[in-house]
Image (cartoon, rainbow, N blue to C red; front, side):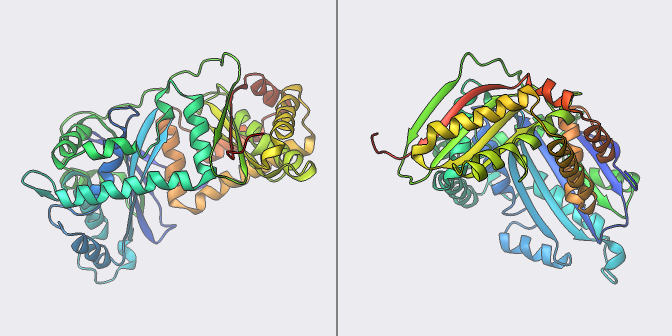
Length: 427
């Protein structure tokens, strides 16, 4: 790409990724902390950032924490919990005005932002050596409500259920927010004990973009983050996806008026593989864009679906298809979706489909450079997968994808699971 990219370093257990740039008016901080997805740890890991965001050792009250953000020229703080491959990852994000725009600030905003982020993660508000009970109980309710909300969002619920059925024997079946039934068993004592272990086990990657340097950031990290001693841990590769033994069909009945037809497919191509660009193009032609086969043939021409799309998970190596249909159209919609998969495998791909898809993907990649947050997320995908690509490198690879490359990927795609959410009426 033209312009700066990330310089890499290390400070204790934290990998550092710094992009020196004057393109933006703010410093963008992002700290990724990942552990393996597991039945035992998933809920307590998900709860941690909700509790940590409530207050720090020097700002133990939530109001004081928010006032500190206001003091830093309206700094923005947020977090997310996600799963990538077989890892559960918490990301903390902080955006602070750059020093050159804060005349008379009286303190380095880069240093102040680093201290605040470090304190959130490594110096939380405690009572008697453990997390504050009020914060823990309140945030347990927050997590429970978010998990319950998934059931009310039938599109998301069907997507989750399809993954659960498809990956029934794998950690990937777990929701990144954990399990409702685990929440009552979490106490301030047990959560803090896990937090201490989490600091020792997690893989930490700290990103900073702005008018700074790797050397300046590296000098600030030890004073901001009170981390255990040690070296950075490395992410493990996701478990290999086996070939499905036939197609599993699951029908679930709920009080719905519109059916949700989802399919899970094993594609066996992951982010670090040479065929990753071809897999992106395969997904784009199949169902990622308005010109895709699923959209045009299932939704537009056959009028069988309210929506029809596909999503490719390059970390796990799977692909999912989502569609909303009239309940009576299950058989017809399923058949037409399968026809599109067969067409891809035969190489029934027009020059226009190929050109439009490559243009859509490369256009999105070029737009990454307009957002520091997007560039950070793109780079972290490379760290997580073990193969880092710059946007321009991936653009060149996508532009070089041929019809034969897409057909080769299509030959690896295996339908694993059909999940159908329908009403409770008997046929």
